[in-house]
Image (cartoon, rainbow, N blue to C red):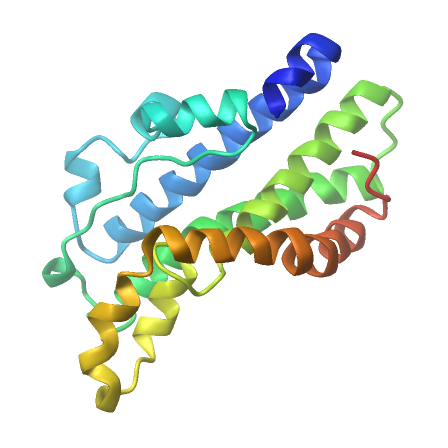
Length: 206
């Protein structure tokens, strides 16, 4: 667990905790921003159009971030009926979060690839930041509820299967367990790792 690193390598613990906190905050902010762009002011009225972590963190999710090394933020609410695009609006809001993670990973990864950073700790911090954002992006795109990828599936859901939509959205805890196993054995080693190396040009050493 991440909390063990606090006592064995405090610097690594701080790098991971800060990276996760920032990645999750920006992820949720972009959900809120996309909803606002789509015409729904719910997130704005709830104070979610900010990069202040306090506006986006769930208490239990934050506890998991700083102890286990994996957590979650408060879901960004939106009013479906206020969206300009009823079909694709929810999918755009959902995909904005992972897109933000990939964008941050790309921006910092290019600094690692093209820059000449002499400070080893700074290189490690940037690499950790890129890795965690790639992991968050890939994980949230898994098409199971309540992850963001499920909203893309719903946007193209065939009308003849409409009666099964509710059953699909009730995936819940079991779906998350399946998604985590997917990340452990497929998403992490065969998707996230190649993306990380492609962006940074570096091997993963953590």
